[in-house]
Image (cartoon, rainbow, N blue to C red; front, side, top):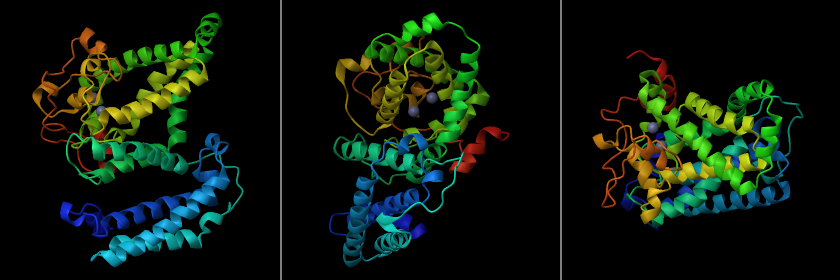
Length: 373
Ligand SMILES: [Zn+2]
Ligand SMILES: [Zn+2]
């Protein structure tokens, strides 16, 4: 494992075209995705999200999987023949063999259980493939800081991605439960019907404002209270910013944030289409504001949150402490006196918390708020 990691994080000159790094890395990524997809085909009841199953076209998935396994195998061979260190290539081929033994693209469901509990392995694959395919190329071309894809602590952030996708059921349940309770005790059917009958774009905008307002104060609270800060400090412990950095968030903070933003949407009667559209948008948007992109957006940056605005929220310098809490509209920070965006298109010098108090690794970070000083 360590050898694989060293290979993935190899220095610039050992990653150049022709060194077998690109083919080896591509082979390994395809192999891991392939194996995960085979596992989803074998154990759909426990490894896939029931609501998502209805949308899958299994025929296309099998064809894509077949292609991925073949391409991964061939790329693995290319890497082995080009590269001195064979770890990447051999690991990829070994994983592809395991995937093939487990049925490959023809894998069928192994047991028929009526599982009440499921993990979102398919959700994780879709998340990483979708956001990765959008943001990795953009960050290669329009990067703000020159850093490799497998940058400092990439494994930690990918693991955060993994956990919050796998436990999607627990997360959804915990954040929806309070809404359901509130819903049972409120009787403003007329108001709810009026909200739900507005045009979709209007509902979308209202949700954006409403959740940003709630989220602003919640976020500020997480910075203000020393106990809550320990949860949120995990998010601020990222020392490199890119598309994966936003995933670093304490499980409890995700539940609280989602709970508090979903409750108003639910209770006020917005239609499910408007809510899902917003959830999809905010997911992409929060990936975007953490991304390693140098786009400036000129005048727009005063009105809409941009990567530079949120990068300042993560900045390590003094001026960056407790500023820029908004997710969509910087006007909230201006109204409440926490706006900071220096002129001259300046970016923070670095990211993280001074002295780096948060321990390394997912599990230690999970326990961090519960430990004494
Ligand atoms: Zn923060
Ligand atoms: Zn952030």
